[in-house]
Each structure stands twice: as structure tokens, then as C-alpha cells.
Image (cartoon, rainbow, N blue to C red; front, side):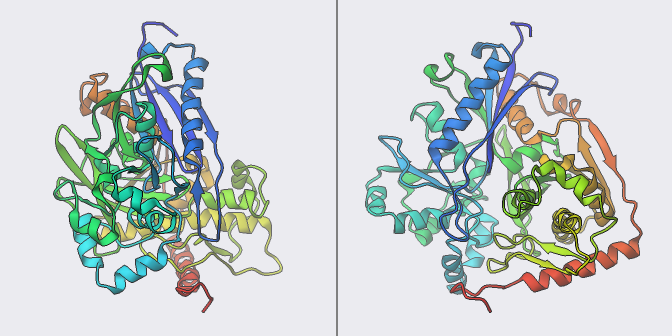
Length: 505
């Protein structure tokens, strides 16, 4: 590589791995390193990460990608950060020590508390202020749980000794060695504490959840120079100039910059996001209104549907059932059979997200016969991802009154051609897979690069996006309708499986 070249370093801190990617001015990947980290399951429905391991894996892959590509840190024009959203970390303001493990967005321990809030009639207030539904998914109830259940923590929080942050805040804190406690509007909008209309932490919401405002980070735009890294981390002070939650970053990385543009990310979960422009659309179909990004003081909003178990269902087949040795095997094992053989898998392993929002739903595998093989089960698991995306897209179309003709896709699972073709068939629209699949990291890079002038404007970015493959619907409509009827029946059998006290109905 030419020593005079400059790059953008994207730090993509995900649910199962930390990734560092170097992008050049053409939006091409010049180096990539990722490292998985431990998933901690203390109890059924509980999901945690070690914040120190999040940091150690993220900083190590960043150092490794710089070494691997034989560049110096001085050649990096800026750093962009994108992260698993809603995941909640609380740490000591003086020592930087976490007071508890990170409570992951998938975690359901606060479901009963959410039900209490609904019973108190809080849903309308919270929805109008935040655009969100009351669910254990978001950060506020997780913070409350830490304050109420970790000994001595509430007293320390009330005394101003603790910091809360989503993962972006934790990384910036570590990168600046405690000098900056910040977040951006996209991550703030996922906490259930942030008013998406006033762009401020909301006092009413803080009161509802019993959270001291001293814990909260400063909220910034998604693209601006926030700080520089401490010189003893990369041996060079690098501007940190882009932050966005992973799904908003992917929306920007897919350059869905016009109203009505839609993308779906197939990662641990599946997340469909539609650009709705400068005004939030409050969903009538149980979707989320959220902030897509803020650039040059202009806020863009989005509608989002969150599927909790997407690609992680394949990870479960690999690690839980041991049907797969590698996730990539899912395509050829599923292709052994011509269809699902009547088997349907509702992967409500941590409840159901949009548009059902059922915390008591549990995974259901139905339609099994003596003729069922591992191929049918793997195929049913893959198809379940596409069905869930279908349900979200139809809800989105109802909210906006617009028929979606093209869906841009990204994330690890989109490399699976069988899944993508089935997705196009079930949706009845084109599915566009880009040449650069790492659009979450690319979006963070774009945001960081714009802030430091690495790219001049959004128009310059538009020239960088290209499709690698376009999947077009091929399946007979009668067959599609039949599959969807059976999927709906399977969903109905998984819904409300557990009652509030954890006993089965």
C-alpha cells in the first residue's frame, strides 16, 4: 500500500463479535479483522456480555487490522463507530470499572416490569415521546434493573458516581481514556429515555424509570468530530467523527437517503428500516419510529421493525442442536430437500419482536413427521428468517401506504443464495445484495469521513454503491399464499406460550 494513502477505520462492535475494517476513498475494504467473544446466559432469557471483553476484542482487532495492512495509524483519517444497540453498560466514573455485565438487547429479564408499565397506562406517553413500544428490548428497563438489583449501585448513581452508556459510549470512553462520555442521537433514541422530537433526555421518562440524569452521556450528531483517541492506544491521535447504532449505520451505508428507501440487515437479529424523511411516522402497526441520523443539524427519521432471532437461529442450530458444524453449511444442507416438507420453525428464542411484540412467545418447531430430516429443519430455520422479514415489510407498507418494490439487504446471512431467493419469492419484490456486504461498517465509515472532509458530500457517496446480485421473485403466487397461511398458523401456536410468572399456559 502507498504510505501516502489515507483510510477510514470502522469499528463495528456487534452482538457476537467485534470487527475492524479499513475502507479506502472508493468505499472498498482494504483490511478486515473480527473476533468473537463470549455470550453469557446466567438464566433462561438472560443474555450478558463482559464489557471488558467487548473493549479488549474491539481494540485488539483495530490494532491487528492496522498491522495486517502494513499502514501506520497516522494514515487513518478518522474512526467511525457502529454498535449493537440498546445493550446497557454501567460503569464507575472514576475507575472506569463496570459495575455489572453488559445487559444485551436480547435480554428478557425486565419483561414483567414492562408489563407493569403497560398496566399503569404508560404506553401512550412513552410511545409519543420516544417512538418506541414498551419492551425489555430497550435500555431504560435494563438500567433500572441494575440500579435495583446490584447492591449499593443506586446510592452511587444518585451521588453522580456512575455512567450509563450504550456500547458506543463505552468505546468512546475507553478510546479517550475517560475524557468523553457521549453518544449520538441514533443510540440515544433506542434507550426509551430520549425524546425524539425535542432531541433531549426526557425528565418525565427518567422519573418513570427512576434513573438519575447524572448517569447519562452527552448527545451529539451522527457525523461530527467528537474527540481524538488517546495517543497511547494507536500511537497517534485519530479523530473519532462518526457514531451510529448498527441498523441506522447500515441504512446510511446502503445509501437509503431518500424517503421510502428500505433496507434489511440479516445479522443476529433482522432489522428492516425505512427512511421516512424529516418527520417521524408514528406506527399504527406496532413498528418503531426512530432517528435514522443527524448530519449538519438535519435530523432524518425512520420506521423500523426488529426481529429478535434472525441469523442467530442458525448459530443455535450449530451450537445448540449441533446440526451444523459451520453456519455456512446451512445453505447446502437445506438444498438437499426440495421444500420444507411441511415443517415450520418460529424462532421465538427470546420472544417475538415486530410486529407481534410478544415477550411470552417461545420457539416452536411444528409439522414434524417420520419423514422429517435435518434438511427440512435447517430449511425451516432459514425460511423463518424470510417469513419474519415479510411480516415486518407488510406492516411497514400499511403504515406508509406505499408498496415496496425493492429491498436492499446486508449482513452475514445474505451470502446465503437460497435464503435470498426465498426472500424475494415471499416478498414478491426485488432483493438487492450490494458488492460491499459490510454496509454497517461502511455506514459508520461514511459518517466519519463526511465529518473530516474525506468525502465531500452524500452525492459523492452515491457513486460508490453497486449491487452484486439482484434476486427476482420466481415462485407461483398460490404457493406463496399457502406458505404464508401455514406460517401464520405456526406463529399463533408460539404466541403467549409463557405467562408472566414463567409457568406454561
